[in-house]
Structure formats: structure tokens, C-alpha cells
Image (cartoon, rainbow, N blue to C red; front, side, top):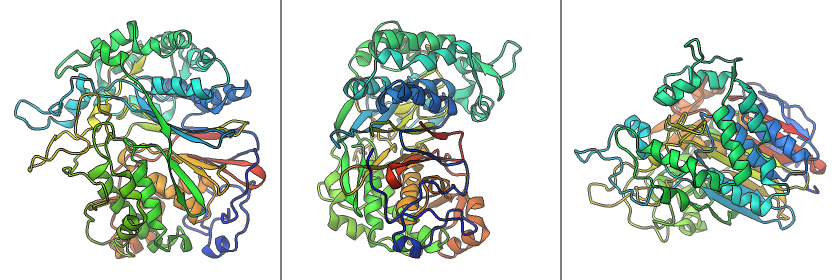
Length: 584
């Protein structure tokens, strides 16, 4: 892999308080980034000249590395990683969920975006989550109902991408998941906390049966959990391909499960069989001297691009992570980003999404005028070119997602965010895996008081808007430079933006960038990690009107890889979760 170093990046030692604080002067001098400097916080950074896998669970990371060692591509490894994550991290993603996949092809330099977002049944109507009184039903009632589940998309999407970018046989990609499911895997502390937590999805009949030992107690961290049903499922997928999920006994079991209980789904076998992933050239824009690529809507990647471009109109790059003005600029950019995102982004197959208008330079420059060094009024949505008349949005986006990055020895790259939506999805299980509650990502109220539909209102066959926005960054020669992404519900956009600013503006290592404090600014609410900011910086932010409140969002789970000097890969894993980056 022949990739140039980022001359503008410097990995420096900690400067107290927030670790990894690079000075603007150091960045300005253009010191070359170090490929061997140690990370200053959190889990250790990883370095490798040949390949890298960064996932939310060590077992998944090892599965990806095993595939790479056997000659598999980054996409091949992604299939193995997803199969293992669905077993060992079922609270976040799985075979019953959906995802967005970004693929960089080293031979062509092309970045392709794969959309594996779930779809609503053809018979779904805007009243899907309205009660008999015409008002939206309670959110958790909707989540636990059969109506919350869309046709799973992750398997179909991975199969298409693997057909186009795979190097070894599909049937060799499920060996790790099958073995772990058959023999059992050790329950991690994070999974144990979910198993023994209070989420209603973890207390359903299906979840209780799975997570309860013969002695009537729930599994704890360090104990071994087997899932023979999951082993049977992945064996079938390995032998039959994706049709094993979308047709036949598994599809029949999914449809039957969704018709149980109150508010049954309208899902049919025809809906399952009709699912098709989408793929297209990624949505890419120049940024600084680079090119940033994200998925197309219904992903919210367009909004992340907008925020990055708006911040170019500020001096955030001349500041650093100890500077309260820098964090205020970041927060204000987020507020503008969310104002536009919440108004306009939806499924482009069903609504008009003004992508070009949102990214048009004059519009971006105008919106950037709302970004100040103190917190201003709550920004309203803008009026980009091509904007449709749509109503406001009230979508609730709980967290239950994961992200991973893979670079293979040939230089091909995967950046993939994948989810079952909430913790354990809907809490319903088929074939040893949880079904998603993705349709609760729609706006429950179909129209506003004036009768205008929201961009993210329910419709038959529609894909709900997603905050998932895995990134790939190319250097000025069009070669792979970096990839990053995170779970976190609607906060995903803020987490990804923070990491990009940390690496590219503040000159941090990938590990230190993902470990930076989280700050999510949306509307009137500033949510963040007060302890990580510390009392001095928290007080300075408060003086600027940024009143950081703790615990308003799902924690981040950022994973990233960047190319450093002489083509050495540097990986980082979010210390808030159990992930690990590891090189070949």
C-alpha cells in the first residue's frame, strides 16, 4: 500500500487535562505524523503496514483478521465480522438488522456506498404507529410490537458487496460465528450489563429464554453462552447464500413472529423476497485538501458533510481540544446541521432530499454565519435550493448500533455502521438472532398541524432515515487516507464530526481523537461528558452558553483507521466500549 503521510497532522504528547492536545503551532509547521508514537489515553492504538481490523468486540476483530490471513478481502472480512457481532454483541447489530457499508477499491480508487437499510412492508401506511384515537402510540409499545420491524437488509447488502468485492468463497465467512455459537462464547461485561439491565426488549419472552441459565439466573460477565439456533442459521446462510434469510423457513418464521401480539405487522413473505439493497457511487465532496465520502440518503451523511464544510468557515483548525471556543464552534455547527437534517433528510426513493442544495457552497457559507463563539438562539432550518415543502420532524432515535473499519493487505477498505436499532432490537428472536425495530426510526406523526407530511413519515416500502454515516477520506491523489464511524443514535453525526475535527484539525492520533469528550448539540440541548471535559473547561463552556448536561445520549463507539508515514496504518478504538483495533 503506497500512501502519503498527512503533513498537517502531528501526534503529540498530552498537554494536560484532555489528552493528546496538539498545539495549533505544531500543526501549522507541518510536522509529519508519527506512525509509532504511543496513544496518550484509552485503549492502545494499533499499527500495521499490512492490514487492520477495528471492531467493537475482540472476537469479531479476530474473525476479520482470520479472513484476511486466508486471502480474503476487506468485504469478505466484513461478512465474518458482522456474523460474529450478531452473536457476541446482539444488543447492537445482527442478521435481523440493517446497515450502511462504504467500500474503497484500491485498484480503481472508487468509493461505493451500499445501502442495507430495512424497508417497511408494502402495506404500511402513515398511520402505522397511530392508536385508535389518531395519536402516536407510546414509543416503547411501538418498539415491542410486530410493526416496528422492517425487512432486514444487512445480509442482502453484504451478499451484494461480497459478490462484487469478495476474494474467497462466501461459505468460508461464517466459520467463526458458527464455532462460537456452537461451543459458546464468554459473555462480555457490556453484554452482561444489557442482559441484566432494565430495557423492555431484554425482558421479552424470547430474550428471557435466551439469557436465562438452567438455574433461573441470568448470564453474567465471564460465563459461557451457547446459541445452537444461531449456529444452525449461519450454517444455512453459508450453504445457501442470502436467500436462506429472505425465502423459506427463516423468512416464514420471521413473518410469523411479527404477526404475534398486539399491533401485528403487515409484513408478508412477498415483502421479504422483494428486498433489494441499493448501491451507488458514494456521496463525496472536497474538504480541505482531501475528499470526504459518505453514504447517500436515507443516511444522514449529507448532513455530516455540510457540518464539515461549514466549519471550514471558522477558525476551529487554529484552536485545539483545550479551547472552549473550539468546542463552542463545534456545538453551534452541530445545531445548524441537525436543524437542516431533521427537516429534509429521508428516503430519496419516496421524498425529495435537496442534497445538492444542502452542500452548495453559497448555502453552506450562509449557514456558517450562524456559528459563533457563544451559543446563539436555536437555529431554524434553512431553505436550500430544491427544498421541498415538508413538515417538522419528531423522530426518536434510540441507540443500539456498532461500527467497524477493515483495511486488507491490498489496500481495499470497509467502513460499515450496522444496527438492530434499539437495545436487542424489538426483543423478538428468530433463528437465534434478534429482529430489528428499525421502523420506529420513522416520524410517528404523519403530518403537521397544516397537513404537511414530514420527510421521514411512514410509507409502504420506504426506508427510515438513518443517522448512520460511515466515512472514508481520500488524500489529494484520490487514494485512501482514513475511515471512521460510530454508533450512537442521532448522536452519531456529532461523534463522527468530533473525531474528524480531532484528527484533521487538531492533529491528534486516531486513538486520541475517538477518546475526546463527546458533545452533542441539537436544538436547545447540549449533552456531553462533563467528567471528561473537567471542571475548568466545563465552566468555560457554560460561560459561553454551552450548558453541558450529562447522560442524554448513547455513548459513542468510534472506530477508525488512518494512513501514516510510509503507508503504516494507525487504528483507534473507542475506550467507552469493548472494541479493539488490531493489525495483521
